[in-house]
Image 1 (cartoon, helix red, strand yellow):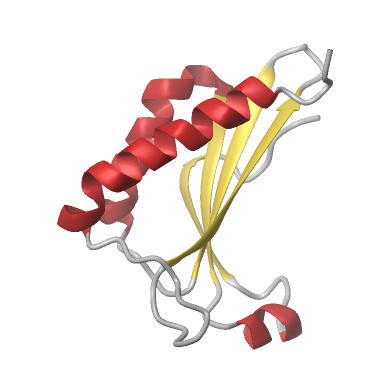
Image 2 (cartoon, one colour):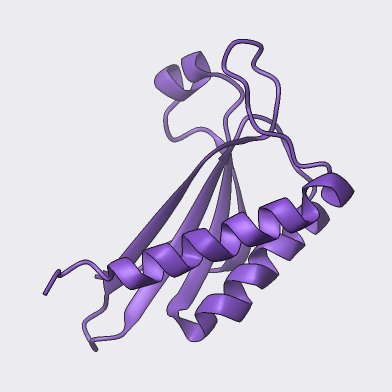
Amino acid sequence: DCAVPVKGIVQAYNALEEAFHEHADEQGYTVYDPVTSIGAFRSVIIRATVNRKGKEEILVNFIHGQEVPVEAMAPLVQGLVNELGDRLVGVVVNITRSRREEETRLGQRTQVLLFGRRFAEQ
C-alpha cells in the first residue's frame, strides 16, 4: 500500500477540474500565461497526509498570478467541500505576480485563507 493517500488527491483534482470548467465563464477564471504574465490561475498544489489519529487530511493551495475575488473562488471551494467532506482541512490562495517575485521574495507573497486552516497535520 502506498503511504500517500492518492485517492484523495485524485478526488480533489477531479472536483476542481469539474468546478473550474463549470464556472470559468461566469466567474471570469483565466489561466496564467508565462509569456505575457497575464491570467490568474498559475498552478494548484494538492497535499494529502494522514494525521496522528489516522485521518486523511487534504490541503489545497492555489498559486495565482493576479488577485481573484474571494466570491469568485467560492464555487471551487464548494466543489471541494462537496467531494471531500471533512477530509478537506484547508484551501489557500498565494498570489505571486511574477517568477522573479517568487524567487526574490519567497515567503512575502499575499496569502488568502478561503477555507479551514493553512496546514495539514502529518
